[in-house]
Length: 291
Ligand code: ATR
Image 1 (cartoon, rainbow, N blue to C red):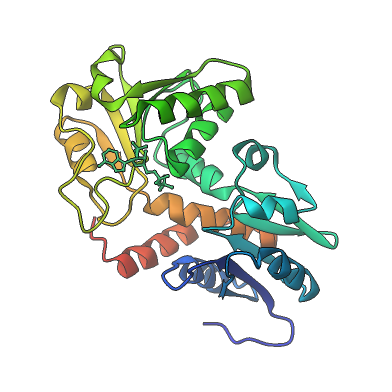
Image 2: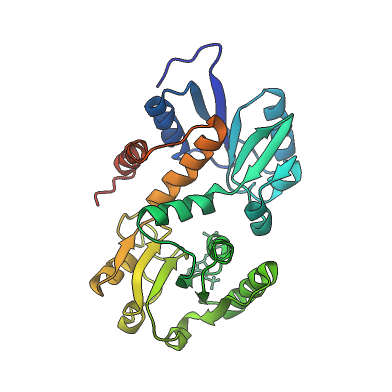
């Protein structure tokens, strides 16, 4: 940890609970690596006290904030400005000072996009299979439409939820690019080579043997699989993608890059790959990932 002095900029995370967050590790590592005089701390903000907390942050002249569960939606009403993607999704995880207030961004999504880019994946023009229709998958569906994918097959156990999200995203972008489908109907996805994003909670530690589908025909269509889960480091989904010849990645790089992009916004710096690699190394050590 760097020494704190009278000029140290303070950033932090507002959430409830915050005890298990990895964000202080990400940001304090970056501050050290880049020689930025900034400290990052967790703030436990109870539901119902968010507005007070944001006002307090303004008064305390905090340099920037991350926002997590359960405040990502509600925080929008506390902002001066909002980035267009964050506005469309209706969720903000990063607050950057603008004048006397804050501007909101969603670096969960731009971080995923950057993590993919580093792994050689450009979303523009991709054919995508998206597993799930909960909060995380819904946000990825917005990112896909925003980034110009050619189509998304959104598979969910509960068909109605996939259909509702598909309709919402298609309407927001004025094009029919998201198709909702029941998980059990996955063989209806046209033949082809797809990027798959695993956005359900299935396979999360300690249920490491669980997977949304074990069907070989499904995995044969996947050239690259991203699991948003990072515990365990290789989920059953990732193992099956690899067993059928595809590449597979977990959600740790996405986690790193949502932090890196927030750090860049707060400090006006560019984080280089080698510095990002230091963050990944620390995260792997902390989560016990051995990939
Ligand atoms: P998050 O905010 O992490 O996305 P969520 O909103 O609770 O969490 O969404 C969980 C997702 O995992 C949903 O898509 C859910 O499917 P349903 O909409 O049918 O509930 C999916 N999910 C959870 N358990 C599942 C299971 N055993 N099999 C298939 N899908 C499952």
